[in-house]
Image 1 (tube, rainbow, N blue to C red):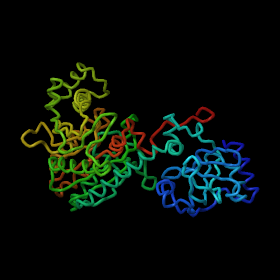
Image 2: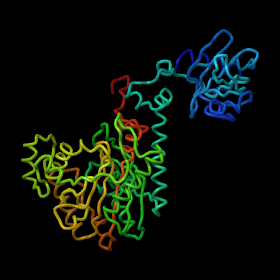
Image 3: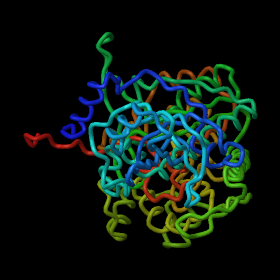
Image 4: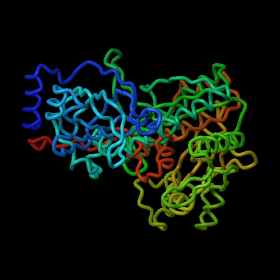
Length: 484
């Protein structure tokens, strides 16, 4: 509820004939201009605006720190320099109010860069009190639930989202420069596919049809390749109705890109070039700090063979593991997973033995074939597939295939996956006859990859929770007064 004292001040402002919520304010300078270009601006008039984050009165002087989108600057209102009507407005200000200031750039006796106000305009009278006298909001649940307060009281958090935006811009510019064309594919799909995940279900009222929120863009981007576009990509919101934890959010952002006549070997080199360039562009170096450790993006990245490394670490060969064998392995390894077929057991073994050791950027290559229904078999070894996943700081950041383009083999693999789904593995997507038909018209050799933007931003901002880099992450709804 609004603060009664603030409501009273709002009433007094209106009583003075002042509109406390005007339409605009003509600003000439930002806070960073005043503080960064003081030598040029000293003694000159500027117009600045921002939110009051600190207010202190010293006799007939009133000092206010105002925060804009670039930093903060001090404002001084005092008799003899500030107009009388502006002084009355100043008396009715609180921390949290947004004001506009016209004044002269100067330094106080203490050497503080200040705008000495000639005129002060109320731009938005706040009716709620900021948390803890602006000492910073630390309750993580409130920070994520009320991101606007987090950004006001913890300005450093803004930098996380600036870096996230720079990541997306760089990746788009990089792909554009390489001749890729950006597309938008359907978010609502009659059949979901491209990954193993639980979907969200909704419906088209106009068509009386159930549809799914996409879990991946893959099957539609491949249709574009079949249609003749040789380099395509999409920056997309995808949705998986699964865990919410430090590295997962049900609504997430990824960038998927596909190129005809390439394979996963080509894309390893392409990914090295793209990501090392990204880090160098943002930080000026291939090396950054993550959680106190040096993280090195200098190419080439390390490669680890999936099956061979697991056999080496655990003494288990999963290259041709049956569901019956996998259940025994799960029991022996004490794997706490609900579904104990070959796919899920192999995945859990990887997480247990290999994933924790993957700190520097690493390509984990050549997965068991039964884990890869959309991937070509490895040349010379049909028990493996030409797939790699990119891991950075122990987190999966990317997934790439030498795409399966044989329609007969694709039908067989998707139908086998459908059988797993009927046996209770609801993460397995259904077979998609329309997609198979598209491949039957002929699909060129193609490499495709998806990059997890949220996790990449998480690492490049030195955060351990994905929620820090998603502006509005999924949170449990608050209970109302009735406890509902």
